[in-house]
Image (cartoon, rainbow, N blue to C red; front, side):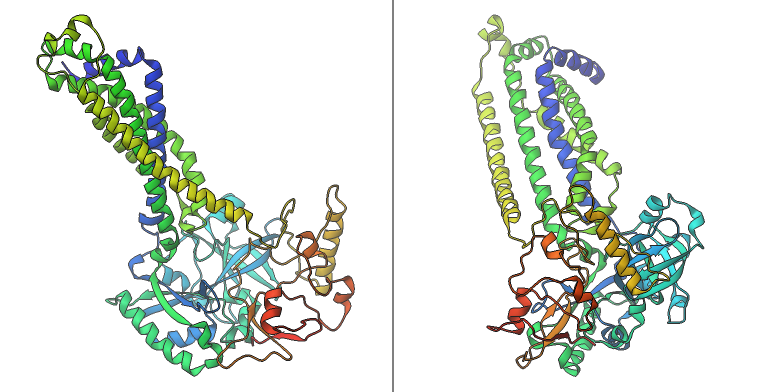
Length: 599
């Protein structure tokens, strides 16, 4: 009797128990779909190679100062120059800074998140164009022409993959001035690291990057640094040399590296740097999905066992008619295979939208999740889990013994749960309950953490607050005209029905947190720092009157900005409570003169 015949018999048998079949298929779809989606996520983020050429030689160099910042601290231009001069285990360095531009041309003005890079950058990171060319050493220098490379996603979504954009000119505006630039290429699809940028431009497009503050300020840190290992050099060798060169930098410039900050340097392979924050989260998700699969299989096993109790008479008759144990097991395999294939098919179909949801969540921990694509791995995972489930479920029912046809059950057709079947039912129930408790315990801890985060006091009342990007066309306009543009924009928005307060700020709290490094160093008249202590750091933001009121932030001392402040020759600032306490402990911060100590 062929296996194809067994499949036809199994289909007819399952058709008589539609409720059981549907329950089994849906249960397996849940277990297989969750595992297929999460495995695809883990593979895409942790296991899939980067598109960068020779990624085994591509490293990310990071500077940290645990005493002042929990994360990495970008490099300054003088620091990068010292490393270039002293490190020989790296064949080249690449620089990347994140800035915001208003791009004028090719349609309506738009705010774009941009990367500003030096000439060797693309050679270092090993990326290639799909159209045109990329920025190279010929595009370095203050006298170079401004050039722009579009990221693949920005080109395909904003410009609908139009190849005619190559060679077009745009204006890039910032708070430091405007520059013209020519679009020279489109970057291949790649990981958007260290920032999810829309365009990448050369240094001359950013006036701030050409300023003395940027070029000479050792504490003016806003550049990410990449390196490529020289042939035959290991990561440990490069890391050791970086630390050897870095040590004298700390001693030669004590004002830039306070002992309390604990400045240090390290290097990682780029893939490790990109995925390190997501590894633990994804492995926990993978373990949780494994528990879901175990629970699903245990649940299905109980259903199959319950059905096998009712079929003991049928199986005994088959055995009495000469069916071997192998033939009976093959018939059971045919049934379980049909159920598992149906469950896997439904699971893989449901895994695609589930993967999209998981990718959005995982992108908080690794930008690789933004680059996920659904490929054949999801299908293979679903097929593999289906085969494993089918084989396991085929061996769940107990086959009748050789003399089963002589028992009273065969004659009477009665249903009897044997000791072996009862033990299996209890075993699967115990496994299911144990896995459920583990999963519920983890879910409870996660829910508790999420509720605590949701209840945390942020200092902002973001309910019913809408953030809108309004790009200002500053080319050919004075600073006063740009300010008038924003004032008129706020006036018109404020006149809309349902709008209570309108204000302007150069960043959105929380959304743009950390976009500008560890902040500027501040001091004040009367502020005395202890020996070895560096000036306190804080982010500086430009806002309009009413900004704090719009976000529900109380001003605990002093007053808010008003329209007269913009007309005064003496600039005024509002400082945070934390900065005030650091600079003026146990004193009144009002009417003090503060200034930043960056060059």
